[in-house]
Length: 321
Image 1 (tube, rainbow, N blue to C red):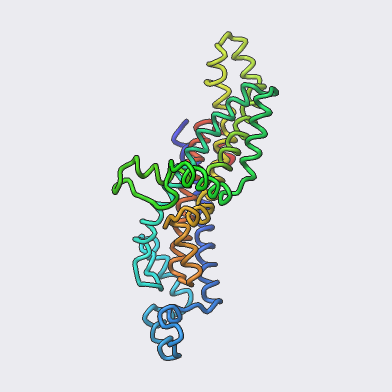
Image 2 (cartoon, rainbow, N blue to C red):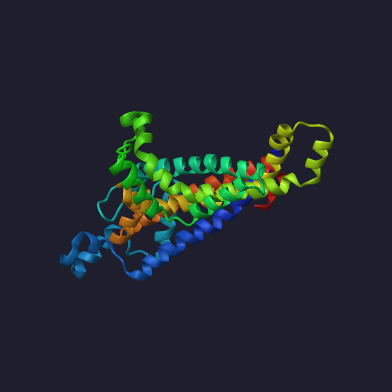
C-alpha cells in the first residue's frame, strides 16, 4: 500500500464531507430561522414582552442578517467553539464532550461486540457453508437483525439486572471515577442491546464475502501450489473476503449513535443522544446545532478509518468507497 493510495482513500471522503457539512449546518440554521424559535421564549416564558424579546435577541446577536450569524457561527466551529446553550448559557463544547464520552463508550463497546461476535459467526458459517451450522447461523443472524434495541434493552434489564442481578439496571460510571472494571460493568447491557444488528450484518457480509473469495481463481491457484488450508483461508481468502464486512461498518456507526438515544433512555444514561433529544424538545437551537456538528465529525472520522482499512485489504475496494 503506497502513500498515494492512502491519500486517495482519505481525500475522497473529505471531499464529500465538506459540502455535506456545509449543507447540513446551513439547513439547520435556515430551519431555525423559519421556525421563529428564540432564546427569549426559553428564558422568559410567559413573561416575554416584545421589548424583552428584542433585547435578548440583540444580546445573542440574532438581530443581525442570517448569513452574518451563520458565518460567525461557522468561524467558531472551526475554532472548536460551538457557542453557548440558550437554555442555561453553558458552553456547548464542554457539555457535548462529557455527553459524547458516555455515548461513545456504549457505541464503541457495541461496535467491538458486533465485530468480534459477527466475525466469529461469519467465519464459522463460511467454513461450514451449505451445512446445518451455516443454516443455523443464518437463522440466528436473521432473528438478531429484526430485534429493535429498545426491546432487547428491556429484556436484558429484566433478565440480567432485575432477575439475576449480574449487572446494574441503569447509570454510568466513568473509568476515571470507578476504574475500567466498573465502567465496563455499567455499559455492558446497553452495548449488547445496541450490538445485535451489527453482529447480524457483519456475520452475513463476512460469510458472503468469504464464500465468494473461496471460489476465486487465486484461491484455487494457492491450493494447487500446495499451501496449507489454514494459510489459504486466513492469508488469502480472509483478506479478499473481508471487504464487504468492513464496508458495512461505515454504515453501522451512524446507526449506533442514533440508536443510543433510545438505549440511553432505557438504561438511564445521560449521554449524547439523550442530550440531543432533550435539547430539540426544549428548542435549544445552538445545542442541537452542536450535536449535529459532533455527529458529522464522528461519522466522517470513522468512515475515514474504514476507507483506509479497505484500501489496505483491497486497493480496488478502497477506491470504490
